[in-house]
Length: 406
Image (cartoon, rainbow, N blue to C red; front, top):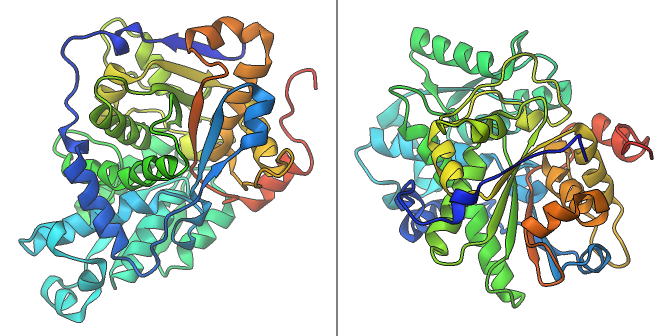
């Protein structure tokens, strides 16, 4: 299929020096999860076993982690933003996050010690909503910037927390620069999931916050009798979430880790482009980054995440929008007694891609190279629900972005 572009990384399975995984070691994962468990709203999100879809596609299992249930915010991003804010405040208090619960950080005593803090970020919606929610819960302020074309519904969710929020006329990466510039001018704290010179700790904390998803999923698989997945498909924007999950997998399964596939929109495929570079250095994609996968519309990789994905991921895929749309329809209209999953554009692209790989005979060689067969147990993360409900209906009800030839 010409519309799908692939980069296979043979080096991911070779021995030799690789990026360290100590930031995602078990004790770090446990620390993040313990913090999240201290939230009154904490519940494990479901891991859905799609038995009928597995049989239909010819694999042993498809397991989807449904993040639309995360803290009532319809997306996973709050895991990273809240953990970064918690660590920042703990650092200000001269304490380790392991010594502080979310409830303690909410206390009047802590607020009196720290005074008023304003957090800022750039976002397509989900990350900013998580940052704004965490700030609200802690009695602090947030100012959130969104790239041009962002959904008004997503802005509305941010404003509903009491935060300031603005849709700019910039692309995502320039909105990040705007947030950082205003933070320098006004003394705010940037909570962004990508690193740059002099800005390292907070992106690491965000990535560590995302590991709660991976820890839950591995435990839930084991409850269902699966020691580990054979394959994990991870969607990526700047790559922080994908890099975090990849880091956990590499640390947890150093000898026989699952085959991982990194999936991006073809209009914002900075990691795929980076994987093609002979010097193995990150590459940026510029322009409007026009894709329905708003949560993945990022043109510049997080360098911390890139090092992990460069050294451990097995394949990078650049996908057209119709792959995400197909995934949304599959999850929203399940086979037999499979559970329905309401998944947004960025959440469903991995399901759409797995469907294409397994059902399109033009992709037989891809299937074989990835060792996808009747023995495969595939873990997917539906990272968001219908965070733009109008777009969801246009795609799932009205059939926008159909498969070519459909």
